[in-house]
Image 1 (cartoon, one colour):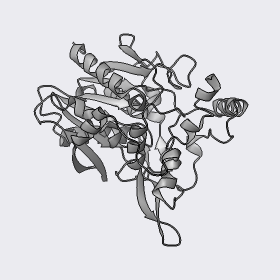
Image 2: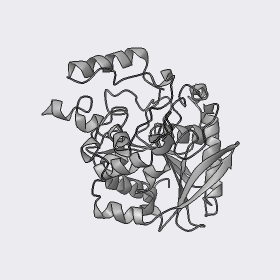
Image 3: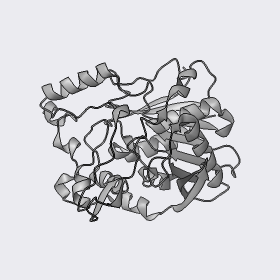
Image 4: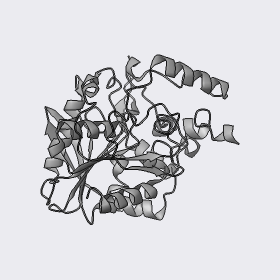
Length: 337
């Protein structure tokens, strides 16, 4: 039974949408109701690139800014943000190189920090009585942490959602994960160095074929297939194949990581940081005990609250979305004081 649930070798993790052949899984009532509260959609120019911006709620209320993870997009928050829009002015952006935002020649934490700040201003998050709270998942949490350290005046506080520090897996870790995958019965080649990409995305002939190739990284069995389908569809765009026929491919820049300068993060240890909290998945491949990445106590303040979401892997909003909403609501109600 344990092997069947292993995200490294389960078809439910490697191709969670294949069984639907392009059809949409049915969503729960709460999910459909959240999506019915559609965001305002706009584009903001930051450092010469057009950045996709979504916003909910009334200007003048306290601000919340949601930031997605690597290779993701703003709509990862479209079923989470509406739960806060009665009490907050809420926004979510697609970082450059991802979603419907422009691609850049180079990427950096500093550039992404400026995108967060520019979009927060454009969305009216500074119109409220105090600076907004920034909330980032995974890589987005690292961008929030960088911003909180470099520019603490930009935010009232920062909340990280299953953010593992330390950069991508090194060659030894990749080899170990690959060997464990094969030993568990999984297919080889699942683990690769994200900085080693050297070719464009594959173009799929049909939407169904593209959706069948969607999977989370690190691999996990999705907790909700309607959510998985929703974010997968919005990760794709129409393009022309070499023969001129229509096709589908991923929106994110396949060379984003090779073009990304992560050296800026190395100087953050020991610096003062805006108030930070961490929400993590109990089964996360990154932050759980023995995971690929840890909380890095030399970076995280000892006083930072840490909330564990039960029965959740790394992609908490796809595993336990309502538990994530409850954790965020509770944290925002009592912290920061």
